Image 1 (cartoon, rainbow, N blue to C red):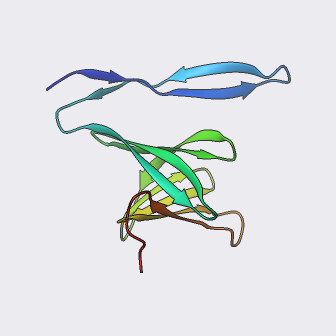
Image 2: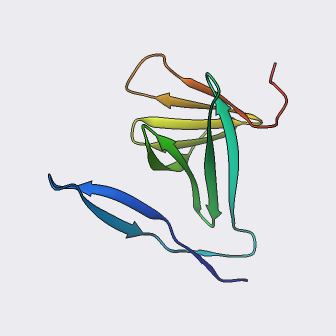
Length: 120
């Protein structure tokens, strides 16, 4: 098993002085573990990259929401892969994905893997 330490930096705003705090979460990656990136195009040609981390029991997706990087954790799904971060849900299936805010109706962001054929 190869030992690769993977570190995530999460910037948090603290206090009225807006001091930056960095938190690191080291994960040991084994032979079957992976860190990959996928580019998506969403809505009106908005595009962004999502990083997927699969390390043992940890399955994470890191993507931008409202101008900041958010860490989403894999949760139970009947189909595809579903990740949650607070009220936000990132749901992927094949070459498509949806970003939802569970606290607001409508406004789901429909996404397509870049360079993938359009889904029907």
